[in-house]
Length: 258
Ligand code: COA
Image (cartoon, rainbow, N blue to C red; front, side, top):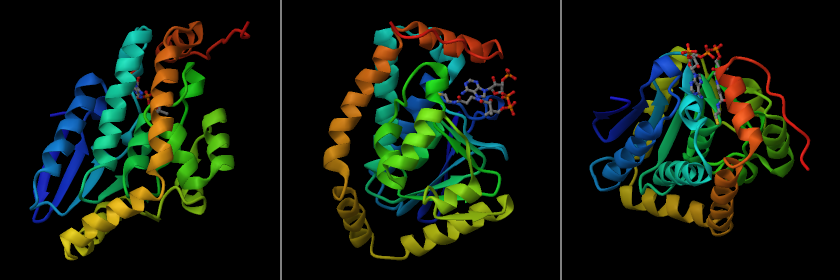
């Protein structure tokens, strides 16, 4: 399955499992993420969730560029909305979600990690929002959640340059809570999940909701605007050029805007 769900007592481990594409999300995988989290939301016996990627190279390398390349404006908007449904299903889950980021977290992979409550990373983790190099803006919440987490200056640098941020820097700028050798990442995530799961589930749910209230009013408006901008990008030549260049393994040649 492209999304695996494993139970360990009161903890659920959700694994994005498409390692041949570094766990990049196609439509099916995105839909399954939402459905998996929506199922977990209704299961009171699950008290904490860990989200991670299969293999030792990637959490998720973002949206599937090969699939996304040929979308038109309407398709881009629909794909963006599907991405928002997935990231919202993580953010809105009543139970806390820990992202165990075990390698590349690029584009939508970074955005999914941003929707989690807590991020732990392995030493080989790499974060980036490289969408502008593909001719589109971030489309699954990154334009809203990244500035909220690390501040507008650092978020602007990451989003406008597409620059990659390694684990050590991610820790310094508050993008992740802690960094571990790859082999220790899951044990640490499970240990933290068990600590959370041992607390009052009602109080934990209430606390998660309250923390969300600190920011979410503004974010919801921003997310809607982001979805429209993401869809509109799929009517541009830059999107076609950026994604074709990725598939053809060459540098994109973007024209000046008129
Ligand atoms: N969409 C589709 N396929 C992807 C992908 C993505 N986002 N990211 C990686 N893949 C595929 C590659 O095309 C390759 O498949 P192939 O062997 O059939 O060509 C496979 O996964 C392995 O990736 P590869 O690029 O060969 O590995 P690498 O170690 O040289 O580079 C990355 C790894 C993650 C740096 C590079 O794959 C990359 O930049 N991916 C795109 C990331 C991105 O821009 N994501 C945001 C999308 S909005």
